[in-house]
Length: 468
Ligand code: SF4
Ligand code: SF4
Ligand code: FES
Image (cartoon, rainbow, N blue to C red; front, side, top):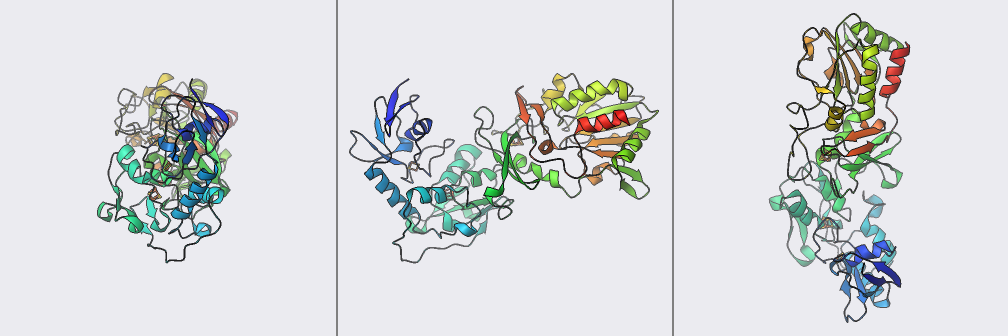
């Protein structure tokens, strides 16, 4: 591999790799704002300028490819002076409101200002100010903090495939906005907040809910569809506050769709059944585990049972169900369900040109690989159904035809109004397991929080069922 020297360190590089990326490989940090590895290079902010031997002028590291024998200095007197000047320039109009900014603690502008800027400002003129503005349901804009890096504009046109963010006016008056101030239309709007290196674009869903440094992060996989995008769940005090994309160049690169990003809210839905519950004249009544399991068993006793397994269950959970079905449920047949109209992986297909799949459960491929057949209506002679699901699989609409219904897993009150018993299980955020995405890639989901309320993991529930 060709080699260059960065701050005295020998670095190997692939042809075409830019100096920012090459420097990272040898532990040298070059500060930058407008560069993003998933977007085109525009070399606008000038923060990444470095000195290169035999070149009279400073060069932008984002737009300069390393070449054999190149000698780069990122901390020379000229490079440092330029970093300071750029920081001063970028902060001229900035309100310096980190203490009340939602991005504080994870803001590139704050970090680089601290590391490369000057603690003093020579600016005495009045700063330009704008009111905070909604940009639709996902993003709130604070133009006071914008440094005009254009990452948001490029994300829209290059990744989301929609030219909805634009820069209007010029110079001191430059403003990022949507065309005619219209709400953002893309289903990938959350990524605007991710790519923004300042607190200019923030998620309405998350802003002012929790300081970034309190959040504990768990690397996991989205269960919003069969794509299997990699994500982080951020929680504090057993409450999930947000999910962010996790880089996986083979699946989702740097992005998440909004459906997947905000999917975690069902975990904390007020209507979620979090106690064992049994049917009564006045609707579902909360009870304890012993009574819940007894009622569930009684509801299935003496009947011909079918088990409906959500294709949102992990491989481990689905395997366990197949193992216990012959002994505990009289050899009940097991079928999978999850997305109306998508019975097998052959029915699944891209739902857009970016990430989304038509199958809205994460493990259709996995349950199919285990040999579980798709649900196609109640088989003749079956009069009771045990539904087991992780939380996202959509219940079939013909369940009413069964004389007796029992649920294990994640359900909301209205969904189980006709159930004889519900035993609360764990959502994707509350358990570990394996899921298989649309292309057959096995991935691990990780427990980010403990099961909420009295809910339990499926192996625990089945163990109690067997032993009671
Ligand atoms: S809003 Fe954010 S991403 Fe867009 S130009 Fe301004 S600083 Fe850059
Ligand atoms: S495309 Fe699917 S897996 Fe990816 S973030 Fe969206 S819902 Fe989740
Ligand atoms: S990151 Fe290179 S000019 Fe902005």
